Image (cartoon, rainbow, N blue to C red):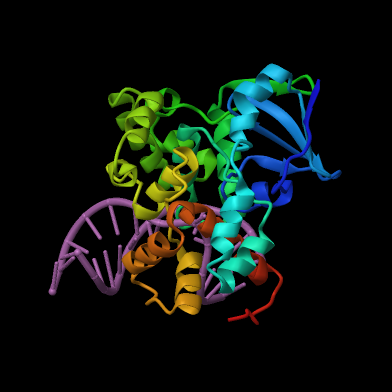
Length: 291
DNA sequence: AGCCAGGCCCAAC
DNA sequence: GTTGGGCATGGC
């Protein structure tokens, strides 16, 4: 069954799935994407404002995918707000104008971004796939085949690092296991997510988990708790903030202060626009950035 | 071949 | 509170 919504603005599947916020959507020959999230596996296509979701009925759309794609938010207004900053922010917002910040599952973002550290996107994807393949529980089916989700903390907590050797996580395997144990001690991801949602400083709380530092915590806060004002600073963002805003490359607190002052409640979206833009230029082999 | 990757931990300042 | 070395692994 295919469910289609029309009149969707400010959306691009390539940009939304390719901007580095998620790792489990695979592009297909016809331009669609297949992915497993929120306990379902679907195929997503988009053209002329029509978002078509295959293996989805009206009920699933309303309780899962409408929120997942953040369709209730007016990205046009947020873009206008950011574009008014001018300069590279305006350029980046126009370039990546189809990015939406997905409302991903909290635990999936915890696992994903622990794995992401000091790695690169192609390898992150492989690691997460290997983890799901080996330990993931069945999470819907597509084309008659069962599909697997990210394994929960109750699956990972009893393991030893060597049990995860095939997933090639390196030293991150230990982080994943210890964070799983702590997550269970605190009542599980649902309980922790709920508690953090009411917290003043979720990022600070998240840093208590093994393998979660400032940057990973901010990614989880942005992508997993959907705090649009979180502003994760990685090596790419340091380059942008130094090159275009003249901030010292190691002065992360000034970068965050700048983001809070100029991008405010849209800091996380600004970060995604900038991240996507700077990396796209790099991939295209150009070094003649404006500004 | 060597540098780098959506960094974090820990020790030493 | 800040800084630098070490770290598993593989993409390019």
